[in-house]
Amino acid sequence: MELQTHIPLSPSENQIRYSSRIVLLGSCFSENIGKKLEYYKFQTLQNPFGILFHPLAIENLIQKALGQYEYSEGDIFQLDGRWHCFDAHSELSSGSKEVLLQRLNDALTNTAKALKEASHIMITFGTAWVYEHKERNVVVANCHKVPQKEFRKKLLSPTEIKSSLKRTIESIKNINPKAQIIFTISPVRHLRDGFVENQRSKAHLITAVHSVLSSRAQSRELAYFSSYEIMMDELRDYRFYERDMVHPNQLAIDYIWEKFMNMWISKEESVPMEKVAEIQKGLAHRPFDPESNAHQKFVKSLAQKITYIKERYPFMNFDDSNS
Image: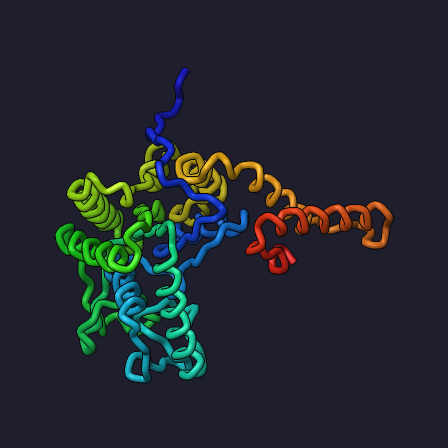
């Protein structure tokens, strides 16, 4: 008896390998996938401006990075003793304007370099709702708890989203024609906008993405991964959500990661991934008696495993893993 429907997925042609360089941009779900890739020590750059929810915010980052934009004091503002930028997430904010400007400009430099070198660029959209700052007349990436009366809320139309996607794709292809771009829609529900409003938002995003993909049907460097559809169909049960009933829980994330891995990661990398996982589990191990002979043997064996894998993949760094 079949008790579940399945989204049909086939292995992609341009799969990820350990030699790949991956850029992940977008909503918090992109970070879920990014953390998995980081765990297995793939070469990634993940959300240099922090979480970005909508297409215009991602386009803005890419345009400014590739256009060699430099942030100055006029681009930032102070609120409650901290300096913020409407283009970036609050994780970049600082009590020092100099620190914030340095973080912003370093992030642009790193983004430009990564986009030029990337083999794969994964872009995850969370919402089509945007906030436009009335005084500055710009759509922001993050409101930073500025009073809501200073913004106009707007739902991007599929046409507006499609235009933004086209500009983003062209910007990337101009500097990196062979980059594989993977679009996905975040399964995180934006219920603060409202139940119906969340569905309208996702529908606009899906419509725009597939309209772009259909118009470029012959391009193998553009693809879609069905993370939203997997969550809504294969995992259509609240037991796959966190207690907030909004975010996918770890079981759901692991399930969708397995689907992503089967589609986008080369089977040839399964053995080194298993060896990396062994090391990660070893580094996470906490002994009852650190001075025991058994633990000393364990530490020596773990060091040998790290040496073995680093000889084959010198870019891997385990110094910051579960330490």
